Amino acid sequence: MTTVTVITGANKGLGYETARRLIEQGHTVYAGARDAHRGKQAAAALGARPLLIDITDDASVAAAAEQVRAEAGRVDVLVNNAGIAGPAAATEELTAVDLQWVFDTNVFGAVRTTRAFLPLLQSATHPVIVNVSSSLGSLAVNADPAAHADILPAWAPLLAYNSSKAALNMLTLLYAQAFPQITVTSVDPGFTATDLNGHQGTQNVEEGAAVIVAAATAGPGAPSAAFVGATGPVPW
Image 1: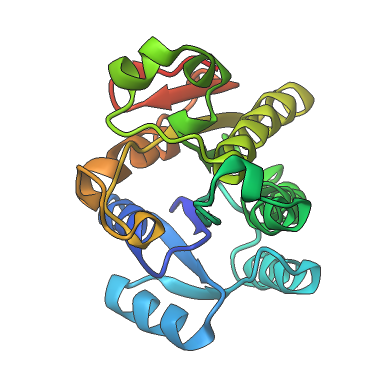
Image 2 (image 1 turned 180 degrees about the horizontal axis):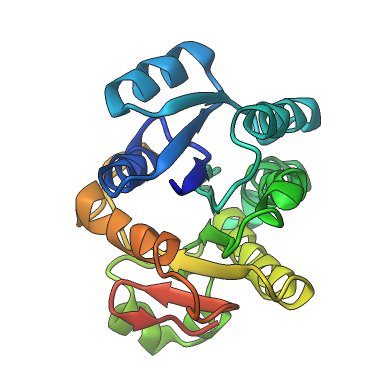
């Protein structure tokens, strides 16, 4: 029985590469995208099923979940990959509206998607949720100036982005506790060259996607409520 995987933000970058790798491993991948045309193009190139989903819109997420329910009947793996960097302005310049914009995608988008797909995940034998986070969301790293250089190749005090990823990590912990039958993991792909950072990252998407793919294919017995990077556990 094929593994049914849903990936948000799969029309480019890490989501696209993750989809490509999982399809190579035999997964049936629903490649989520908020733009129908780009989503169909990416899905055709990948050999994936296109899934129109805007994770900032409740109706769009509900429609996407209904499509997958009607076509596949279950979801084995959900990868909450879609995210935005938000403004790079100084902390004192950012407003509540700026943070609401980032949180609506990076945090509330993951909540919308997880909640909508929970019934389909609960129909799977060994369901998995992978939340694509960042070491920039680690409270331990942000609190320790020495860790900025030791753990991260590029640290930045991004009020909106860092705090949104910290919140996403808390979602990982609480969903894992609420649904022990689902393996829920936060992953840090590392500083990867994508549109998110203007392709300034120090590694390519093949390197960055490796930890996402590993979490998505870990199988039964994999630790839940974990935060993992390319070299192992990341401090919360």
